[in-house]
Length: 243
Image (tube, rainbow, N blue to C red):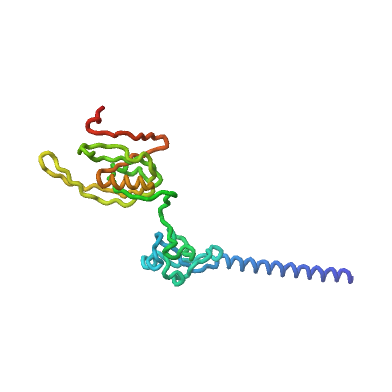
C-alpha cells in the first residue's frame, strides 16, 4: 500500500511538472508571437528620392511617411523622424517602400552619381530628333553608331560615320523644338519636332568629336547588335550618293 501511495504521489508530481512546462512554453510562444507582430512606426519613402536630394526637400515634397514595421523587419539605423538626418542628402536613389536609414544619407562629398559611367570614360549628352535616335528602340545599355551630316570645307554636304560603336547610358526628357525650312520660292515652313536628350559613355577624344559635330552639323544614331558591322570610310556626298 505504501508503495502504491508513493507511486501515486510521484505520478501526480510528474503530471504537475509537465503541465507547468507546457504552460511556460505556451506563454513563451505567445510572447514570441506578440514580439513578432509588434510594430514600430518608422520613416519610409513614398516616392523616389533622388541622389543629392536633401532630407528636408524630400519631406517638403511629401516623399516621407511613418509606416508600421515589425520588430524583426527593422533595419539598422532606422529613423522615426528626420531630426537625426538634418542637413544631409541622399547618397543614392531611395525607392518607394524603402526604410529611411542613416547609412543612406550623408554629406555632399559622398554623393554617388545615378549614372554608372565606366572607368576611364565620361558621360556626354546630345539632343536628337525621333528619327535621329531610332525613336522607341534606343534604351540605356544599347550600342549605337553615331553619324554626322554637315558640309565640308568646300561647302558641299556629306554624311559619314563619326563613332562606330558607343554605349547609351541614359535616355532623358523629350522637348519640342521649332525647325524652319525655306523652299525655292522663298516660302518658309515651321515644324515642331521633338528632340530627346541622349547620354553616351565616351572617352575624351570622342567627347570632343561629338561636341564639335553637334555644333556644326546634325547627328543621328544607328542601333547596333552584336553582329552589326560598321566601317569607317569617306562617307557619302552628292557626287557619290548613287555610285
